[in-house]
Amino acid sequence: MTIRAVVKGVGHYLPTRVVENAEFEESLDTTDEWIRARSGIERRHFADESETTSTMATAAAQKALVMAGLDPSDIDALILATSTADFTFPSAATMVQAQLGMKSGFAFDVQAVCAGFVFAMANANALILSGQARRVLVIGAETFSRIMDWTDRSTCVLFGDGAGALILEAQEADGTAQDRGILSTDLNSDGTYRDLLYVDGGVSTGTTGHLRMQGNQVFRHAVEKLAATATTAMERADVTEDQVDWVVPHQANIRIIQGTAKKLGLPMERVIVTVQDHGNTSAASIPLALSVGHERGQIKTGDLLVTEAIGGGLAWGAVVLRW
Ligand code: UT7
Image (tube, rainbow, N blue to C red; front, side):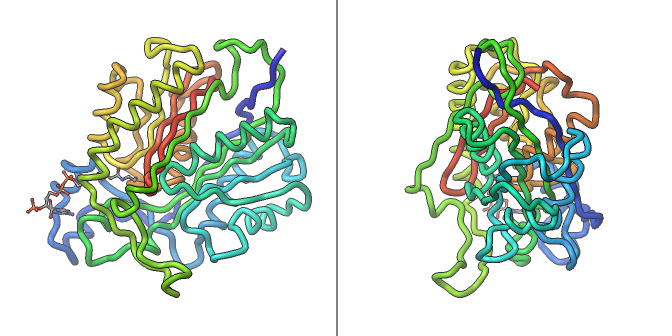
Protein backbone atom coordinates (compact mmCIF):
# COMPACT_ATOMS: atom_id res chain seq x y z
CA MET A 1 0.00 0.00 0.00
CA THR A 2 1.24 3.46 -0.88
CA ILE A 3 -0.03 7.03 -0.59
CA ARG A 4 -0.92 9.15 -3.63
CA ALA A 5 -1.83 12.85 -3.91
CA VAL A 6 -5.20 12.63 -5.68
CA VAL A 7 -7.12 15.49 -7.35
CA LYS A 8 -10.31 16.35 -5.42
CA GLY A 9 -11.22 19.66 -7.03
CA VAL A 10 -10.22 22.18 -9.67
CA GLY A 11 -11.30 25.74 -10.44
CA HIS A 12 -10.22 28.92 -12.16
CA TYR A 13 -10.80 32.63 -12.35
CA LEU A 14 -10.27 35.00 -15.27
CA PRO A 15 -10.65 38.78 -15.12
CA THR A 16 -13.70 40.08 -17.02
CA ARG A 17 -11.67 42.46 -19.21
CA VAL A 18 -10.80 40.69 -22.47
CA VAL A 19 -8.30 42.32 -24.82
CA GLU A 20 -8.25 41.16 -28.45
CA ASN A 21 -5.02 41.30 -30.48
CA ALA A 22 -6.42 44.11 -32.62
CA GLU A 23 -6.40 46.45 -29.61
CA PHE A 24 -2.57 46.45 -29.67
CA GLU A 25 -2.59 47.67 -33.30
CA GLU A 26 -3.70 51.10 -31.99
CA SER A 27 -0.57 51.70 -29.86
CA LEU A 28 2.13 49.39 -31.28
CA ASP A 29 3.75 48.47 -34.60
CA THR A 30 2.09 45.05 -34.59
CA THR A 31 -0.80 43.18 -36.18
CA ASP A 32 -3.36 40.58 -35.19
CA GLU A 33 -1.90 38.38 -37.97
CA TRP A 34 1.66 38.54 -36.55
CA ILE A 35 0.55 37.71 -32.99
CA ARG A 36 -1.66 34.79 -34.15
CA ALA A 37 0.94 33.38 -36.54
CA ARG A 38 3.93 33.63 -34.18
CA SER A 39 2.25 32.73 -30.89
CA GLY A 40 -1.26 31.35 -31.48
CA ILE A 41 -2.63 33.99 -29.13
CA GLU A 42 -5.92 35.69 -30.11
CA ARG A 43 -6.95 37.38 -26.85
CA ARG A 44 -6.06 37.58 -23.16
CA HIS A 45 -7.67 38.74 -19.91
CA PHE A 46 -6.27 41.72 -17.97
CA ALA A 47 -7.00 42.42 -14.31
CA ASP A 48 -8.75 45.66 -13.41
CA GLU A 49 -7.60 47.89 -10.54
CA SER A 50 -9.52 45.90 -7.93
CA GLU A 51 -8.07 42.54 -9.02
CA THR A 52 -4.73 41.26 -7.73
CA THR A 53 -2.90 37.96 -7.72
CA SER A 54 -4.31 37.14 -4.26
CA THR A 55 -7.94 38.05 -5.08
CA MET A 56 -7.88 36.00 -8.31
CA ALA A 57 -6.20 33.09 -6.48
CA THR A 58 -8.90 33.23 -3.79
CA ALA A 59 -11.68 33.15 -6.40
CA ALA A 60 -10.11 30.13 -8.15
CA ALA A 61 -9.57 28.36 -4.81
CA GLN A 62 -13.20 28.88 -3.78
CA LYS A 63 -14.35 27.14 -6.97
CA ALA A 64 -11.99 24.21 -6.38
CA LEU A 65 -13.26 23.90 -2.78
CA VAL A 66 -16.88 23.80 -4.00
CA MET A 67 -16.05 21.02 -6.48
CA ALA A 68 -14.23 19.08 -3.76
CA GLY A 69 -17.08 19.62 -1.28
CA LEU A 70 -14.57 20.95 1.26
CA ASP A 71 -14.32 23.95 3.58
CA PRO A 72 -11.15 26.07 3.89
CA SER A 73 -10.72 24.56 7.37
CA ASP A 74 -10.27 21.12 5.74
CA ILE A 75 -7.04 22.30 4.03
CA ASP A 76 -3.69 21.64 5.75
CA ALA A 77 -1.40 23.53 3.36
CA LEU A 78 -1.80 26.20 0.68
CA ILE A 79 0.93 26.62 -1.94
CA LEU A 80 0.65 29.54 -4.34
CA ALA A 81 2.86 29.60 -7.43
CA THR A 82 3.39 33.18 -8.56
CA SER A 83 6.01 35.70 -9.70
CA THR A 84 3.59 38.60 -9.24
CA ALA A 85 2.66 38.51 -5.55
CA ASP A 86 0.66 41.57 -4.44
CA PHE A 87 3.54 42.71 -2.18
CA THR A 88 7.20 41.83 -1.61
CA PHE A 89 5.90 40.24 1.59
CA PRO A 90 3.83 38.77 3.16
CA SER A 91 3.43 35.93 0.72
CA ALA A 92 0.38 36.10 -1.54
CA ALA A 93 -0.40 32.62 -0.18
CA THR A 94 -0.96 33.92 3.37
CA MET A 95 -3.15 36.70 1.94
CA VAL A 96 -5.25 34.05 0.18
CA GLN A 97 -5.34 32.06 3.42
CA ALA A 98 -6.85 35.11 5.17
CA GLN A 99 -9.27 35.85 2.30
CA LEU A 100 -10.53 32.26 2.42
CA GLY A 101 -11.03 32.51 6.19
CA MET A 102 -8.60 29.64 6.70
CA LYS A 103 -7.31 29.95 10.26
CA SER A 104 -5.28 26.75 10.47
CA GLY A 105 -2.57 25.07 8.43
CA PHE A 106 0.26 26.87 6.64
CA ALA A 107 0.68 28.79 3.40
CA PHE A 108 3.64 29.85 1.28
CA ASP A 109 4.53 31.05 -2.22
CA VAL A 110 6.61 29.16 -4.76
CA GLN A 111 8.49 31.27 -7.30
CA ALA A 112 9.60 29.37 -10.39
CA VAL A 113 8.04 31.78 -12.91
CA CYS A 114 6.18 29.93 -15.71
CA ALA A 115 7.24 26.55 -14.28
CA GLY A 116 5.81 27.58 -10.89
CA PHE A 117 2.73 25.37 -10.92
CA VAL A 118 4.74 22.25 -11.74
CA PHE A 119 7.13 23.10 -8.88
CA ALA A 120 4.16 23.74 -6.56
CA MET A 121 2.53 20.41 -7.47
CA ALA A 122 5.81 18.59 -6.80
CA ASN A 123 6.08 20.32 -3.40
CA ALA A 124 2.46 19.51 -2.56
CA ASN A 125 3.11 15.88 -3.51
CA ALA A 126 6.19 15.79 -1.24
CA LEU A 127 4.21 17.24 1.69
CA ILE A 128 1.51 14.61 1.21
CA LEU A 129 3.89 11.67 0.74
CA SER A 130 5.90 12.68 3.83
CA GLY A 131 2.74 12.91 5.93
CA GLN A 132 3.13 16.64 6.65
CA ALA A 133 -0.20 17.45 5.01
CA ARG A 134 -3.28 15.48 4.07
CA ARG A 135 -4.99 18.06 1.86
CA VAL A 136 -3.09 20.69 -0.10
CA LEU A 137 -4.58 23.58 -2.06
CA VAL A 138 -2.21 24.28 -4.97
CA ILE A 139 -2.79 27.54 -6.83
CA GLY A 140 -1.15 29.29 -9.78
CA ALA A 141 -2.05 32.98 -10.08
CA GLU A 142 -0.48 35.90 -11.95
CA THR A 143 -1.00 39.54 -12.88
CA PHE A 144 1.72 39.83 -15.54
CA SER A 145 -0.12 42.90 -16.93
CA ARG A 146 1.49 44.80 -14.02
CA ILE A 147 5.06 43.98 -15.15
CA MET A 148 4.66 44.63 -18.88
CA ASP A 149 6.57 47.30 -20.77
CA TRP A 150 3.68 48.51 -22.95
CA THR A 151 6.14 49.95 -25.50
CA ASP A 152 7.83 46.55 -26.07
CA ARG A 153 5.85 44.76 -28.78
CA SER A 154 7.97 41.62 -28.44
CA THR A 155 6.61 40.90 -24.92
CA CYS A 156 3.47 42.86 -24.03
CA VAL A 157 1.26 41.13 -26.61
CA LEU A 158 2.09 37.69 -25.21
CA PHE A 159 1.02 37.68 -21.55
CA GLY A 160 -2.28 37.65 -19.65
CA ASP A 161 -3.72 37.46 -16.12
CA GLY A 162 -5.66 34.74 -14.32
CA ALA A 163 -5.63 32.00 -11.70
CA GLY A 164 -6.25 28.28 -11.38
CA ALA A 165 -6.44 26.02 -8.33
CA LEU A 166 -6.23 22.31 -7.62
CA ILE A 167 -6.93 20.40 -4.40
CA LEU A 168 -4.81 17.33 -3.75
CA GLU A 169 -5.71 14.79 -1.05
CA ALA A 170 -3.76 11.84 0.40
CA GLN A 171 -5.34 8.55 -0.60
CA GLU A 172 -4.17 4.96 -0.19
CA ALA A 173 -3.31 3.26 -3.48
CA ASP A 174 -1.69 0.13 -4.92
CA GLY A 175 1.55 1.82 -5.98
CA THR A 176 1.07 1.10 -9.68
CA ALA A 177 0.71 3.33 -12.74
CA GLN A 178 -3.03 2.57 -12.62
CA ASP A 179 -3.41 4.58 -9.38
CA ARG A 180 -5.18 7.91 -9.42
CA GLY A 181 -3.04 10.87 -8.31
CA ILE A 182 0.47 12.15 -8.92
CA LEU A 183 2.60 9.32 -10.29
CA SER A 184 5.90 11.16 -10.81
CA THR A 185 7.60 14.55 -10.91
CA ASP A 186 10.73 15.97 -12.55
CA LEU A 187 12.16 19.41 -11.67
CA ASN A 188 15.12 21.26 -13.21
CA SER A 189 16.70 24.70 -13.25
CA ASP A 190 19.82 26.36 -14.66
CA GLY A 191 20.52 29.87 -13.38
CA THR A 192 23.15 30.58 -16.04
CA TYR A 193 20.28 31.39 -18.44
CA ARG A 194 19.12 34.31 -16.27
CA ASP A 195 19.47 36.91 -19.03
CA LEU A 196 17.04 35.15 -21.40
CA LEU A 197 13.98 35.99 -19.29
CA TYR A 198 13.87 38.24 -16.23
CA VAL A 199 12.26 41.28 -14.62
CA ASP A 200 14.57 44.30 -14.38
CA GLY A 201 13.27 45.42 -10.98
CA GLY A 202 13.02 44.24 -7.38
CA VAL A 203 14.41 45.06 -3.95
CA SER A 204 17.86 45.74 -5.43
CA THR A 205 16.45 48.53 -7.64
CA GLY A 206 13.56 49.79 -5.53
CA THR A 207 11.18 49.34 -8.48
CA THR A 208 8.72 46.67 -9.59
CA GLY A 209 10.42 46.48 -12.98
CA HIS A 210 9.38 45.13 -16.37
CA LEU A 211 9.63 41.74 -18.03
CA ARG A 212 12.52 41.37 -20.47
CA MET A 213 12.77 38.36 -22.77
CA GLN A 214 14.95 37.11 -25.60
CA GLY A 215 11.96 35.23 -26.98
CA ASN A 216 13.67 33.32 -29.77
CA GLN A 217 16.40 32.10 -27.38
CA VAL A 218 13.81 30.89 -24.85
CA PHE A 219 11.93 29.24 -27.71
CA ARG A 220 15.06 27.29 -28.69
CA HIS A 221 15.41 25.85 -25.17
CA ALA A 222 11.70 25.26 -24.68
CA VAL A 223 10.86 22.40 -27.07
CA GLU A 224 14.01 20.43 -26.27
CA LYS A 225 13.80 20.82 -22.47
CA LEU A 226 10.03 20.29 -22.27
CA ALA A 227 10.17 17.06 -24.28
CA ALA A 228 13.11 15.84 -22.16
CA THR A 229 11.46 16.56 -18.79
CA ALA A 230 8.14 15.04 -19.91
CA THR A 231 9.97 11.90 -21.08
CA THR A 232 11.85 11.62 -17.76
CA ALA A 233 8.64 12.01 -15.77
CA MET A 234 6.86 9.38 -17.91
CA GLU A 235 9.73 6.93 -17.43
CA ARG A 236 9.60 7.51 -13.64
CA ALA A 237 5.86 6.88 -13.67
CA ASP A 238 6.38 3.74 -15.77
CA VAL A 239 4.01 4.93 -18.49
CA THR A 240 4.49 5.34 -22.23
CA GLU A 241 3.33 8.01 -24.72
CA ASP A 242 0.57 5.81 -26.13
CA GLN A 243 -1.02 5.55 -22.66
CA VAL A 244 -1.21 9.34 -22.22
CA ASP A 245 -4.74 10.75 -22.60
CA TRP A 246 -3.81 14.44 -22.30
CA VAL A 247 -0.72 16.59 -22.40
CA VAL A 248 -1.49 19.77 -20.43
CA PRO A 249 1.40 22.05 -21.38
CA HIS A 250 2.36 25.52 -20.21
CA GLN A 251 0.53 27.81 -22.61
CA ALA A 252 3.19 30.20 -23.92
CA ASN A 253 3.16 29.68 -27.67
CA ILE A 254 1.20 27.27 -29.90
CA ARG A 255 4.38 26.54 -31.89
CA ILE A 256 6.18 25.39 -28.71
CA ILE A 257 3.14 23.29 -27.74
CA GLN A 258 3.02 21.69 -31.22
CA GLY A 259 6.80 21.17 -31.37
CA THR A 260 6.87 19.47 -27.97
CA ALA A 261 3.88 17.25 -28.78
CA LYS A 262 5.57 16.20 -32.04
CA LYS A 263 8.82 15.39 -30.23
CA LEU A 264 6.86 13.30 -27.73
CA GLY A 265 5.06 11.50 -30.58
CA LEU A 266 1.65 12.72 -29.41
CA PRO A 267 -1.04 14.11 -31.77
CA MET A 268 -2.48 17.58 -31.06
CA GLU A 269 -5.90 15.91 -30.49
CA ARG A 270 -4.46 14.80 -27.14
CA VAL A 271 -3.19 18.24 -26.08
CA ILE A 272 -5.23 20.74 -24.03
CA VAL A 273 -4.85 24.14 -25.70
CA THR A 274 -6.04 27.42 -24.16
CA VAL A 275 -3.27 29.79 -25.31
CA GLN A 276 -5.57 31.37 -27.93
CA ASP A 277 -7.92 32.66 -25.21
CA HIS A 278 -5.60 33.28 -22.23
CA GLY A 279 -2.19 34.19 -23.69
CA ASN A 280 0.73 33.27 -21.47
CA THR A 281 -0.44 33.45 -17.85
CA SER A 282 2.86 32.09 -16.47
CA ALA A 283 2.28 29.96 -13.34
CA ALA A 284 -1.49 30.16 -13.83
CA SER A 285 -1.47 28.60 -17.29
CA ILE A 286 -1.42 24.91 -16.35
CA PRO A 287 -4.11 25.06 -13.62
CA LEU A 288 -6.21 27.24 -15.96
CA ALA A 289 -5.81 24.63 -18.72
CA LEU A 290 -6.64 21.81 -16.27
CA SER A 291 -9.78 23.59 -15.11
CA VAL A 292 -10.92 24.60 -18.60
CA GLY A 293 -10.08 21.12 -19.95
CA HIS A 294 -12.20 19.60 -17.17
CA GLU A 295 -15.03 22.10 -17.78
CA ARG A 296 -14.99 21.32 -21.54
CA GLY A 297 -15.44 17.62 -20.69
CA GLN A 298 -12.03 16.72 -22.14
CA ILE A 299 -10.31 15.63 -18.88
CA LYS A 300 -12.18 12.80 -17.12
CA THR A 301 -11.63 10.70 -14.01
CA GLY A 302 -8.97 8.06 -14.69
CA ASP A 303 -7.31 9.94 -17.57
CA LEU A 304 -3.50 9.92 -17.65
CA LEU A 305 -2.11 13.47 -17.84
CA VAL A 306 1.36 14.88 -18.47
CA THR A 307 1.92 18.52 -17.49
CA GLU A 308 5.11 20.33 -18.51
CA ALA A 309 6.38 23.91 -18.23
CA ILE A 310 9.45 26.11 -18.68
CA GLY A 311 10.12 29.71 -17.71
CA GLY A 312 12.49 32.27 -16.28
CA GLY A 313 15.47 30.92 -14.41
CA LEU A 314 15.53 28.97 -16.56
CA ALA A 315 13.37 26.56 -14.56
CA TRP A 316 11.45 23.65 -16.08
CA GLY A 317 9.74 20.43 -15.10
CA ALA A 318 6.91 17.95 -15.57
CA VAL A 319 4.33 16.09 -13.50
CA VAL A 320 2.57 12.89 -14.53
CA LEU A 321 -0.78 12.32 -12.84
CA ARG A 322 -3.88 10.22 -13.26
CA TRP A 323 -6.98 12.46 -12.88
O1 UT7 B 1 6.50 31.40 -20.67
C1 UT7 B 1 7.87 31.58 -20.50
C2 UT7 B 1 8.60 31.11 -21.64
N1 UT7 B 1 8.41 32.00 -22.75
C3 UT7 B 1 8.23 31.50 -23.94
O2 UT7 B 1 8.11 30.32 -24.08
C4 UT7 B 1 8.28 32.43 -25.12
C5 UT7 B 1 9.16 31.83 -26.16
N2 UT7 B 1 9.28 32.60 -27.35
C6 UT7 B 1 8.28 32.83 -28.22
O3 UT7 B 1 7.15 32.48 -28.00
C7 UT7 B 1 8.63 33.49 -29.54
O4 UT7 B 1 10.03 33.57 -29.65
C8 UT7 B 1 8.01 34.89 -29.73
C9 UT7 B 1 6.51 34.78 -29.94
C10 UT7 B 1 8.30 35.74 -28.51
C11 UT7 B 1 8.60 35.58 -30.95
O5 UT7 B 1 8.49 34.76 -32.09
P1 UT7 B 1 9.75 34.48 -33.05
O6 UT7 B 1 9.25 33.71 -34.19
O7 UT7 B 1 10.80 33.87 -32.18
O8 UT7 B 1 10.15 35.93 -33.53
P2 UT7 B 1 11.48 36.74 -33.27
O9 UT7 B 1 11.63 37.10 -31.83
O10 UT7 B 1 12.65 36.03 -33.91
O11 UT7 B 1 11.17 38.06 -34.07
C12 UT7 B 1 10.94 38.05 -35.49
C13 UT7 B 1 10.63 39.47 -35.93
C14 UT7 B 1 11.62 40.51 -35.43
O12 UT7 B 1 11.83 41.44 -36.45
P3 UT7 B 1 13.15 41.36 -37.38
O13 UT7 B 1 14.30 41.47 -36.43
O14 UT7 B 1 13.07 40.01 -38.05
O15 UT7 B 1 12.98 42.51 -38.29
C15 UT7 B 1 10.87 41.18 -34.30
O16 UT7 B 1 11.29 42.52 -34.10
O17 UT7 B 1 9.33 39.86 -35.43
C16 UT7 B 1 9.44 41.15 -34.81
N3 UT7 B 1 8.43 41.26 -33.78
C17 UT7 B 1 7.17 41.67 -34.01
N4 UT7 B 1 6.56 42.07 -35.13
C18 UT7 B 1 5.25 42.42 -35.03
C19 UT7 B 1 8.55 40.96 -32.45
N5 UT7 B 1 7.39 41.18 -31.82
C20 UT7 B 1 6.51 41.64 -32.77
C21 UT7 B 1 5.16 42.01 -32.74
N6 UT7 B 1 4.57 42.39 -33.89
N7 UT7 B 1 4.41 41.99 -31.59
